[in-house]
Length: 304
Image (cartoon, rainbow, N blue to C red; front, side, top):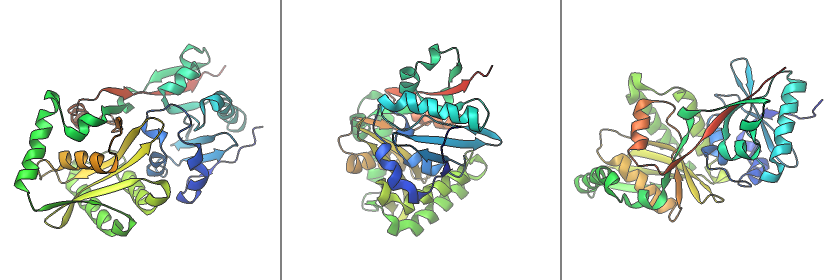
């Protein structure tokens, strides 16, 4: 039997996990640790640490799932096989992986393997953008965004302030998020409650995992909030959270631009995560003119 000890992800285990990140090519939002913390309660995420990798175990209802190991490319095959062995021998079920990044799928040649069913999870692909374009909103395709931003800066001149936020601002951030969620009404996204719980975890441990947080105040009131991480290997900012008062025209465009300018100046790539298959989110993300996608795959072992 495979001797692996899986335990629940907690923020207090972060120091053990951080050194494993950034060791191989991966442009998905899962290439940084923050996403695992946001969704750890929703998917009951557990992990096991070997001397070479982080291995994952999740549950969706009664189904066991995993994700690609966090490790170097040279240790990927061994760590993948170790995960498969645990599923087969200990859990006595086929290996099922969600959100497997394209680089890993190709490196392991899973699409060519008769042992696995592999299909792209199209609705969960991450949107990738040119960092310089988003910092300056240049080009014809971003003209409407620039117009909205110009309106905000003109109409609210002298009334707004951008601030870098810390755990000291937690109460104010939580109050804003509660108000934002309440205003969503019946349009609330799937798993919103878990997302808000995960955001609170990120706020509490933002310094330990080096996530950046910022807000925009209008007339002294917090009206927009965002969180992002940096993937040094890919020179990529990952924007995990971006919430704003939709009644203030141009506010989303303003915090989007300013956050990149002030916290991620110079990054070449921006990952704004997936659209969850929701038409409204899809239109919003496409309107920023993505240059490509970080594609993700469902992988299932075919048991004899």
